[in-house]
Image (tube, rainbow, N blue to C red):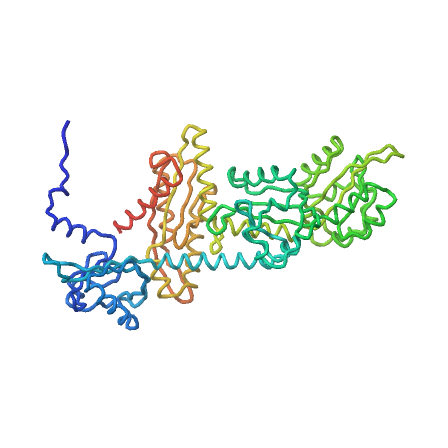
Length: 546
């Protein structure tokens, strides 16, 4: 067995440190005790635009005038032996635009232990700050949407309420969020119903179901009043932790009216005609025997236009199979069922309704009927769509976001395992020199360029390919069912050609390019994180060659 020599180990300590200095990815400068530059590494030249020859013997040109006194104070501390780690400052590029960096200052000693020079190490975090700003703005829009929603919304984690909007406080009888925050949601539930609620919550967090319906949950308010709520829940990330977002509705009054209708046939018209919800009675064939006057308010058709007609003719064809299945199940089992469907509206086309069907038996006529009570949920469906979009869609480009992309890759991994490692690939790409566009032309122009960039990349892909924005100017592509690496190479060429064409925005002509890294399954990884990390690494290798 032969032992290979490591050439790095043959270097003297001095040569080794010099190699580290010149190879480092962070920008490094060395100053004398008067603040003049003794040396800078290549990363410093790339980051700030000045060449080493321009800088040697001069003071640092990257520090704005309004920060020079503050820097002088820190340099004095370093001269006395202090190390100042990773404080955030703004620096200036040779071209004039500003960079946000993390700066670390350290003393350099001679053999006698005296401070003879100062080293500064800076890392550019400009894009990180931009991404943080965009994320913060997106979260603020999301928060405002939920706060102002007329639909009650709550967020639950570890069984406790972490957020509830004003509409939710009203349902549960609380006066302020502070009164309800961190309150155990299980204390509002009857003991015989808690296990079922816990199971549904765990299915959202562990089995990664997108939504779960909680139907007819009895709850007790702080004032002792019992209420019945219907709820729909979905798993979200809240305050960086897996949580459950719940949309719910107080249906206590509606349920009481339904009971009253079932108890006495003589009373149902009086009650139904004073309800805002639509109420109807169907025979075993689906013929409508009664339609409440509220049908005209909610759907635009009069009661006379419904009675004697087949109710299924008013239901959207995509929803009809599910409706027929539920209708038959109510007749056969006698159990109440709830369903959401699209119903014909006299002017709006189709309107989303939530309908609950309950079986009752006419003793005199020995006939089965189904009582249907429904309400308009169009606003709730729109809110659910907005919340899902915010959870899984990038706000700027309308592409899938990082969370949804990860789910899609994990599904591809599962399919690949089931199909004997059917190949797929991940591409990681960003826009070269995007920071300059943002700095010189402004963030609004940068956002416009990102939107056009996304459209050009998407137009170069196959229909089955998935393009996602991970943050800032970083994108990823999932390429399922690839035949060969050659097909990937040709796709990369198409993307780069589409991006390289000049863009005209407000009389500005912009040209850019993209660095693209590729990870193949299973050669480059068998997990999402391994594949993404490999593709990211390959992208940065491409940058070094350009």
